[in-house]
Length: 462
Image (cartoon, rainbow, N blue to C red; front, top):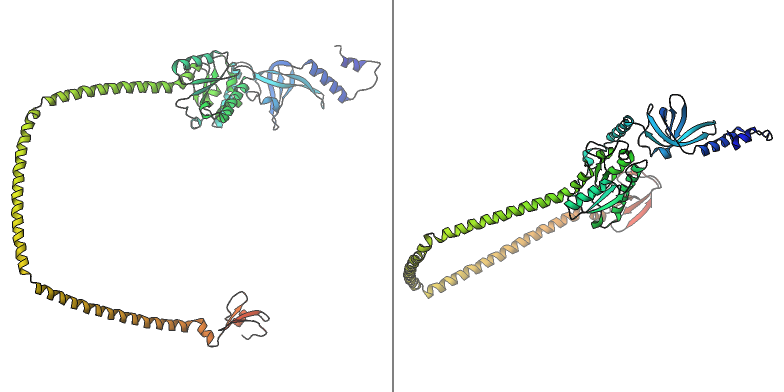
């Protein structure tokens, strides 16, 4: 192998010795330049997931082994966590860990090989998200009854978008479709799908109410397990669960299940079926209205026929021929009753007039005047009695009030002070009742009948 590195190491004319660090640095540059991107298929052994988030493992093919490292900045893109014994296809670059002089593969992407490995990885992710209850039914949101705008996250060149467009155009006239194009297959497809969902949610935050996306269809046509693997990525599943827009998962054919199917708010076996789900509410409402309209017309027609029959039956009824004669008979009866009432009323007036004349003749003007005078005398006497009773009551209450006022005045502390007594208080307002409660040289306030004085205690006796 001829290279500048080897020439510099073995050139007899250059006798300056190199340090180990210099050798490792030059070897690192040479290896990284020669093996900037390599693909390797091997088995993983001695896998370690460090607390820093980095992965360290060894690639083994039965005859030789190669140390590998997948740093945190790269392993977030890997769809699952590797384990010992897993056959993988790895892409990365060769480099040298200079402090130890060991060369290793810096892994940039990692994929399992074979259906069995994919199934193991699928079950691994499914178990992890299931423990976090991301698949629970109570987390799934209902789809809008009549969506106006449907977002479709899929490839613009795939059959899935054209199937969805065909079904919605045929079955509904009120739904508009918003395509959010993305890859649905390949190494970064899962991340692109995730960003498309985030883009739709960010759009809804600023869009007008009538322009918001009501539901998202995320999917693609059928394919192998490797083709559908983008819809099994953990980061995509978490983004779908956190989406504020309800999501219908439409990945593959009926027998194909992905992690996206479990975490979505609704699963459709095919993209066409997802479009049917979106349009079914409108179809059901139209069918319901059409059925009720037909039932209404039938009911009205039946009621009209029934009413016409009833009218004809009434027109032929005997009552219409007998009713005029009945009215005549009732008129004669009313006139007879009217005459009887007039006669009875006249007789009653005559009787009452005779009774009134009799009462008037019995009344005498002299007797009436005497009765009035007697009542006036009795009324004056009652007024005098009432005035006297009120005056006696007022005098008695006034005497009682004077007695009570005298009692209150006798019990008043001010009256006690007037008799030469006083009230001593400490500075805090506490009334002194015992000499023990005051100290010598302490200030006291003394209240007299008129005014207050402040004094200092010079002596006290208990």
